[in-house]
Length: 232
Image (cartoon, rainbow, N blue to C red; front, side, top):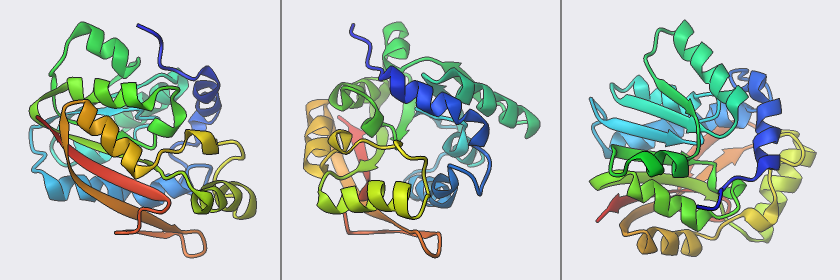
């Protein structure tokens, strides 16, 4: 199987590993939207005792939020330093989360249909083959399991907002965090979900205000958006 990793992307996030839990650092926007993402998932499902896989978990922001909802959570990421940060932070909080430095494809090679829920948030725009990753995530789900995805739309507005605005004007993210060509239209992601043998249940827009640092979900899919799907 061809490796679905962009090593430049992995190295980029590895270098930022120590910043993961700094609420006012390079990942401040993630800290703002994280409760929004976690609450969206919790509103859709009762997570108590559910087995959840967080793909591309980074330093564990979403992973820990899902754990706090009573789930049995596993976090995987190709960037080893981020995984080490996640392990240390979970240990300090006495949270029993399984963290592994590996890709979803490597995990699938060992077993399929392992999890009730798979999350892959703010990851798809950083891999060479997002369609393949979506399919892998679905294969890792038990029958009728739930998939949650989020990424960035590809259009002039998202280029201005997510790259020019976030990285260069407001300095919300390190320069070079995103590449416009890797952004994914909702129609494209919906087709990846369907071809991976899952039903798309809902798509919601996610708005982040760079002035007030507040975020909310809405029906505007112009820039950031979330998808909820269910395996057939």
